[in-house]
Length: 202
Image (cartoon, rainbow, N blue to C red):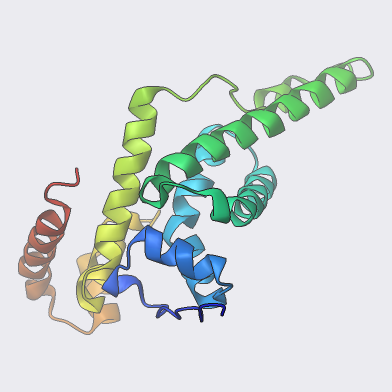
């Protein structure tokens, strides 16, 4: 008798282990798949973006890695090392796309007088260093820690550290409906909770 798939909530604050999500995905639980991808999408995207691939190529890498993950789920023997598996797989796919773009640029150079701008946009194909791998894994742990915080802490940390454009305390206070004077103390409490959540992991 086939075991019924365990449906896991979409909210990531309960933080089910990767192994539980993988097991549920194998049982074709679509919500668990969405949650698993949501947990790691920034990690996957960060690798081709850091390698200077275009946004479109990075999206292609993301889709390919997701497909490979879906195909590989039944054979993932150590689901607790999923982050490392994704870094390796995404790096290899980034190399593949980068090499394809370089071959294309060489072909175009035979028919173009000046393609220096095109070549400048080709990704760096050098292997990812151990230091970079560790940094990527640590960044992923921080993202998971932030996702597990309360709504107020998660929103505040997002405004303070994750937005590309700097946001003033006055604007943050308006958006979060809180006094400006409470942002500093709330920030300190939230960072302390994040620190405790990451103890022993980083």
